[in-house]
Length: 65
Image (cartoon, rainbow, N blue to C red; front, side, top):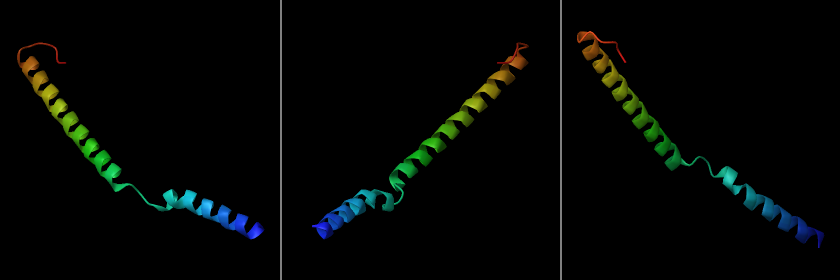
């Protein structure tokens, strides 16, 4: 009885720890990298647009954004 119980508990412990041994989820990591890259590109585009608008406003003699 004791041996069966210990075997059962060992099996439960092993199956509950398999997710920790599975490793990283590369799909999620790749999606996060792509999202960060897209956000960075959008930020650069916004910065360039604001700089261009400020240049136009300065040429017109108005205060920059």
